[in-house]
Length: 423
Image 1: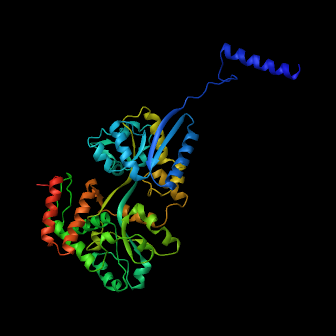
Image 2: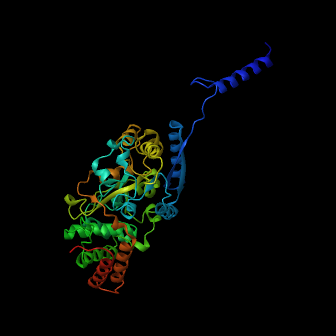
Image 3: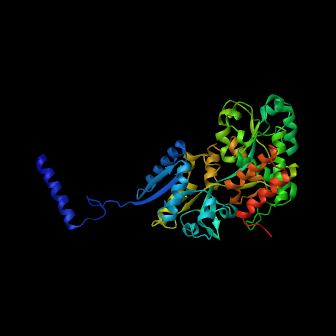
């Protein structure tokens, strides 16, 4: 049989097979039908690149699933996500801020109950304490990716230049200011929210009260806010910190700030360049009146979390993606510690084996995780109206526009009009 006839014979056989029905090993195969799910997150270009690469790894392992990605910077992500959650058009799997749980799911019904997906999502990688951060009304709405807390970072080389050890107590910083201020160097600095939380830690240690009680009620009165205002103004006047309005991140690199209060997750953003140059940066213990009280008045929270939409039409596939993002070595390898030190034990084990758990961010994470006095953060503490009003009140006293007593009284009145207060 010549070549053209062989080709005609093959085509004829294929057509007959199609018409008479095909077995699993037939020439013609049924086309695969993909399930499409959506994933949303916020971040910079670097985060977007590795997340897209990780999604491609997931799709390669699960060709039956197609993931449509949606991402942007935080400033655009938050308002868009809020509209989508209100309209029920949010992504199947989404990165969320911990404050969204109280805002959109106070009764636990705002997001999918992830425990219903526990046959797919390996929850054994997370301690009950970690999972509690994602619970509302007993329902597991989200899972933390990593934990976060304000931390004191110290440029040990600058302190050593003045013959000073790494500061541990409030008094240590005031002593450092006496030595450094003549050269225009501040022992410490921070943005408004960071210094607000720093002053809370001081006031809680001094008064023995929590700013918000376990019921979420404002427990500080004007007396406790007076302690905070006076402490902030003392730090500014004695050159421990610059006013928060004058805080500039470039002063970290040029040596004008010998220390900074910042989140664990910001360690690399703030100090990557200096560490690369060999500068000795350390994560100090949490400032306290006495080192035995280190951690008292300080708070931890999830750096960020993943949740599943309550409106998802594909919970099984969403759960498969969620588990891959949290627990797989493929995802952990690409993400590394960019979103913080992973909470998942399997992801952390893999990074440890690869030698990726080291450096200033890991050190800061260990300081946070090993401290027994640090408490879960009430999300209300991050409300901008709280710390902006606090700074305004401090400035009134700083510029002799009000006494500390008057400023704290007005501040408490303003807070109590918006927040439920304890009896």
